[in-house]
Length: 429
Ligand SMILES: O=C(O)CCC(=O)C(=O)O
Ligand SMILES: [Mn+2]
Image (cartoon, rainbow, N blue to C red; front, side, top):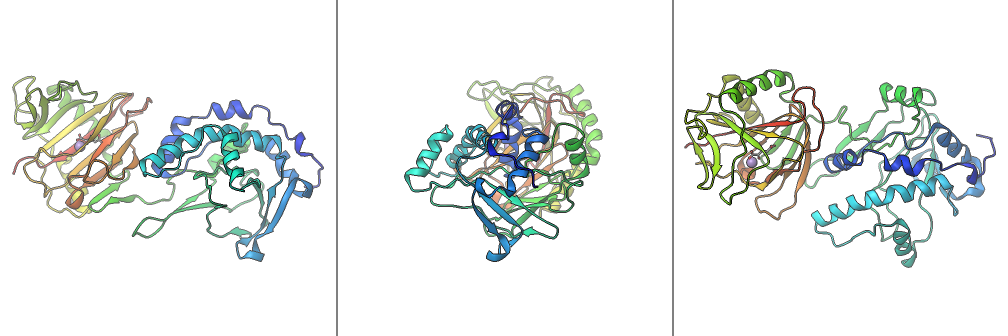
């Protein structure tokens, strides 16, 4: 820590290109689904070391906060002064436009009027106009036993809703413990905490290769909840069917061998991007004549394949867990999404009775599931559904609008380049 390195000597080399080559689709996906995302490889080990070594050079900082004096915790941090080290300034400028896009989309969804300019300099100008002229990037230093109490970082009236944290030290070598905790305050519910463990795998990756930096906004549900309430009557059970995934996939292949996947046509004449088939006493179909349940597969005129008892039981178990015991589905619509395929917001309303819930099981590539209220323009939740996840919605959520964003390309070990979704319904009275 005693090395004298001047700010300008911390090179910003490669930062812009490494920020640009991050997997932004994944980061945006994770931010939408979890409110946080992890990325590695932006700062090189030598850049981290050089930045950390600046901590003792008081001339580079505008103020020093000793956390225990304010009841903030134990440890300290310093706000960088102008001019920021080139590496910090470059990082901020390069990250900002990507995050501003997310922030603007979120505000639009939440019907918040504020929009952020695409360019960081322009946003700084806006801050300066309202008197927010001090730089906010800071460097924290924790010693043994130090901690930082739960808090939000809010300065002034203009607040950018996303933050990025970089870890300068190597977990496991330079320190142990020191996990990063994020909490989500949920309206009328208890807060949800996420502990970001800097696990050995991550450390190995970081020290064994180029990476020493880790964005602490990690989205891993490493030890997070397995059950998530999406709304009243709507539950997400993560990994619920993970153990049966292979068997279910094989079952779907057998069903598709009898009633193949096909792209149906909506009453308006649009070919659906999702390919569909069914099993059960009746199957959901659409054509120019409308949406309906039909006991026969219109493509071959024969009954749909029967619903295998193992599938029916799995749906029944999930429904019971969500508070809908005795679910007895008579129809299972099977959707196949290839990259780009989507399902626009809709309600499942072709069933005779809305008392039984809908049970939806995902296999293969992850997707972003949109879940809203019972009116089309209500607030939307976006959750990432992974292979084995099950969502149940019923009761007050039975007619909730829902949909699937265009599927991102990928390759899943079980299904290859596609996602399968099975929705279990009680279609007949
Ligand atoms: O694919 C999904 O997760 C949703 C499917 C769906 O909503 C439907 O088939 O009606
Ligand atoms: Mn649906």
